[in-house]
Image 1 (cartoon, rainbow, N blue to C red):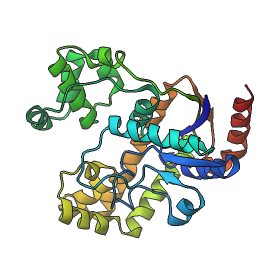
Image 2: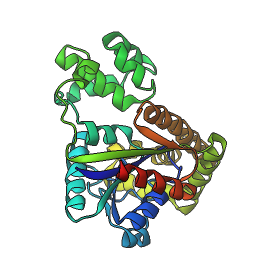
Image 3: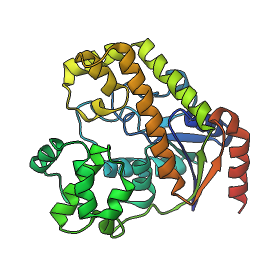
Image 4: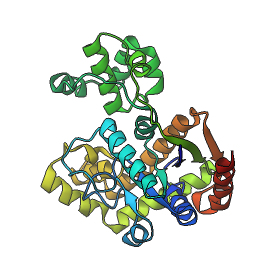
Length: 302
C-alpha cells in the first residue's frame, strides 16, 4: 500500500501553491483534478500552473485533451489512476490537487457503467425552461436531485439521460458496480479559508483574468472551435462569450464571472464537506503548508 495525498477545496483557496510546497517537501508529483485544465488552449480562465512551476514539480493531466474533444469523468479516472501508479512506481508521492469533485470521486471510488449518450434526448433537454430539468429529475430520482444544483445543466441532463435509458434511478446505479482505487492509502486534506477573504480573492483572480486578455482568448477559441465545445461553458469563458455576443458590457461580464465563481465555491465546499474522510484546514494553501505537512507525517506513522 503506497501513500496518496489529495488536496481539495474551493476555487482560489490556494490548492496549487500548497501542492507545490508539499511536493517539494515530500518528493511528490502533482495530478491535476480540474475539468477545464485538461483542455489545451484554454489558458487564462483555468489558472493552470506556470511553466516555472511545472519545471519545479512535474504536473500531470494538464493540456491532455484537444479543445473540441469530449472528455468524461471515467476517462479522467483511468488516466489519473495510471499517473498515480507511475508516480508511485518511481518512488515519488502522487498528490491529487483540484476542485472538480466528480473527477476526484471517479478516481478514488470508481464510476458505475452507465448507458451511452443520447444526443437526441440531450438536445431536447437543453431546450427546457429554467428549473424544468431539476423538477423532472426530482420526479425521476429525488436523491439525485438533492445532490445536483438546479442550475447545473450538464449534470442534470446526464442524470435524466441515465434514469430514462436504464429505467431506474441513477442514485441506485451509483451505488452498484463501482471499481474503487486499490493499492493506495489515501489522505484527504481540504482547504476552507474564511468565506469573506475567499470571495475577495475570487473577485481579484477574475479581474486579473479579464485584464490579462480572457476576452481575446475567448474570441480566438470561438473562431477556431465554435460555441459548443464543452470547455466554453466554463466560468469566465462563458461570461466572456456573452460579452462578445453583445449580451452585456465588459464590466457586467466580469461581475457575472465573479458571481459565478463565488457560487461555484459554495457548491464545491458543499460537495467536499459531505466527504467525512476530508481533514480540513481553515486557511489558504499558502499559509497551510506547515499544518498539512504535519498531518501527512502523522498519517505516514499510523
